[in-house]
Amino acid sequence: MYLRTGRSIPLPLRVPYHIGQSGRARRAYWPQIYPGRLVLLRAVENPRDPFKRWGGMGAEGLEIHEIPGNHDTMIREPLVQEVAAKLNQVLRRAQAALMVMLLNAHALFSLMPD
Image 1 (cartoon, rainbow, N blue to C red):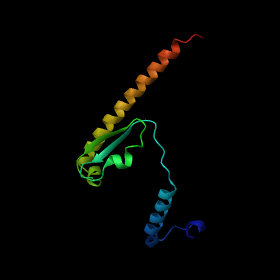
Image 2 (cartoon, rainbow, N blue to C red; image 1 turned 90 degrees about the horizontal axis):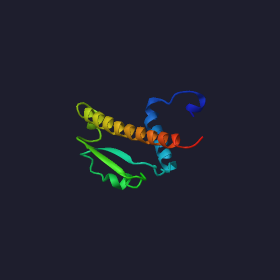
Image 3 (cartoon, rainbow, N blue to C red; image 1 turned 180 degrees about the vertical axis):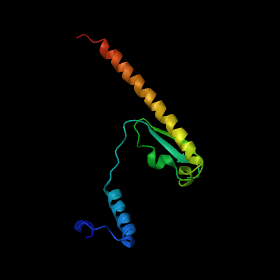
Image 4 (cartoon, helix red, strand yellow; image 1 turned 45 degrees about the horizontal axis):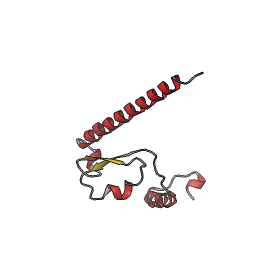
């Protein structure tokens, strides 16, 4: 009602509204298998088994990197520095692999006759 009339949702109603919206989105979402490898930065203090939720979601498997702390503390100083360093390492490796793939494709196409 509020949003349809261009008004913002009153503060006491925002949390229930967002909980309802995220529940509807979760029920409507059907995840697809990602064609590559998944990388998970996992909090060591998280008791859940990551393979239960993520194990079958990457066609090329699941790579897990454990970060000290829990879900909340790993994104705060000083642990966020470890998250940033690990993410940087993973992204650099992916970028290097992409460059190799592009160079190989370029070499292959340069051998093709005109």
